[in-house]
Length: 333
Image 1 (spheres, helix red, strand yellow):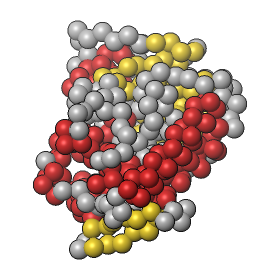
Image 2 (tube, helix red, strand yellow):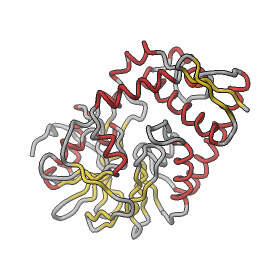
Image 3 (cartoon, one colour):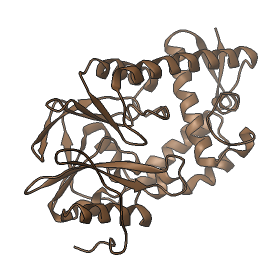
Image 4 (cartoon, one colour):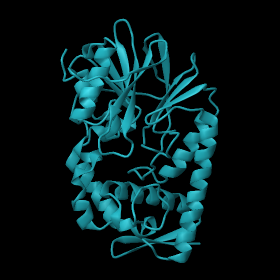
């Protein structure tokens, strides 16, 4: 089946017997590419995550399937989570012949009408001090613009459900935090954990607030501690290189402890700051001369991360928040 793969060569990688990585480019995004993992079976294959709904990624993904002699009509997709860089191409991969497996919480978000979903998000960010005129320019944010098209092919994965493909059994482990329904897929027999964006090795996953989650960062930290005890020989992340699970979990826990202390110090120096104002003084690994020069999409993610840390500090009793003229301000205690 030709879905735009002719003339495109992709460096697929064999990780273990019947398990392959297909690198899917994310043009213009600092993550650079998505790791899409294929469990190749005799009759049906399973693809873990897909990439943005854009042409460069589309051509690379279908070229990778073609190189591995896999017909998309024989592929089902399992999503680690709802974000567009993981879910965007899923409906195109499965067409009308496959299924998209996803957690219940993330499926609920994927099936919400886009306009209503983003109207709520914009109002929330404005209440945290994000300038409305900047949000109006944020319509091109890949999270919005490159999301999957509506489809009726979703199937819900319950906690502990098992997916079988390519001679492997993957147990679905809830790991809420990065999204409400983030999943890790655990191949116990081979000691491999597919972490999605729950554990990344070159960068720290972005943690932002979600409707219905009072403390997204707290959920994330608890989920890290849960997966740390798995006897994984290899952790395969959604982006960048693989690695060893436990040491990276420890490093991420320490990273967020430092971030919480940093944010507390910022609020002591600048009492009454909004999340937007506090985020401007946090340390970010982004090549920009100043907060004003931040790429808009990255500024949006940065403010979301700041809000998640503010929520966690409040739950710890380390700050108080007060709404003034519809905007939240924070003070360290």
